[in-house]
Amino acid sequence: MNFDVFVLVALVFVFAGGIKGLIGFGLPTVSIAILAAFLGLIEAMTLMLLPSLITNLLQGLVGGHLIRLIRRCWSLFILGAVFTWLTSSLLSTWDPATFLVILGVVITVYGLSSLWSFQLPSPGPGEPWISPIVGMLSGGITGLTGVFVVPSIGYLQALRMDRDELIQAMGLWFTIATLSLAFSLKEHGLLSDELGWLSLMAVLPALLGMWIGRILRPRLSEAAFRRLFFAGLTLLGVYIGASTIVAS
Image (cartoon, rainbow, N blue to C red; front, side, top):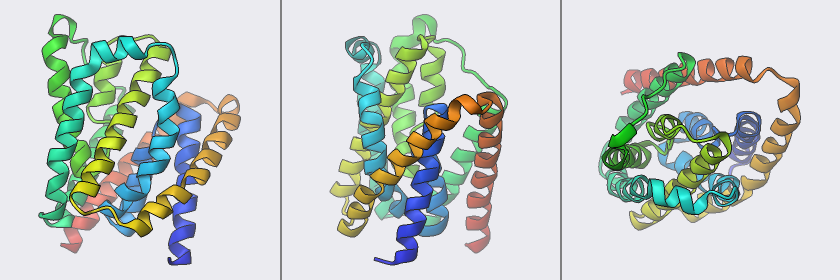
């Protein structure tokens, strides 16, 4: 294993974990975006799996709303998992550059919409049929890019849950999406043992970053940091997409 790669992965997950510690989410998106720019998308997906699973599992299971969330969001979760598996099969057949461009677009759109504080309207009575559609879209994007947040997070926010319930819902979806992506990559022969071990080793840097982020949280303006974070994420998305197109 290249020592430079090990150092890069450790630093990325300290940073991504710090983001999650500060604002409560962002580890998969940040790690995918940075690592894909250096190592490739499939490699970034693989490395993200265990840090994402470990850091989101407790968030998804603890909080007292598990049964209620499963009853309310089951169609989103199930179809999200199914479509993650379906679309990830394309990773082994299409040009890798295609997925990097898609990743760049998804990250850019997510960053801009967050910067502008764009909010989806409440689904209201349409929730029973809108939820599975959101699950299909979210799963499809997850399978192609490894990014879990579009459009699932905006939709979960639109359900007008209280803060604790929303945090648990995000953790639950991230856990399901991570497991689905892991099984999908394994099923399609895209999960290498070497990167799997490196993903395991990346758990500690991610937890360290979360600890640092939680320490810094009371000392920083969360609103200002979020603006800076999403601005940087937008620029990174533009860079990934544009550089891939130019290189192709």
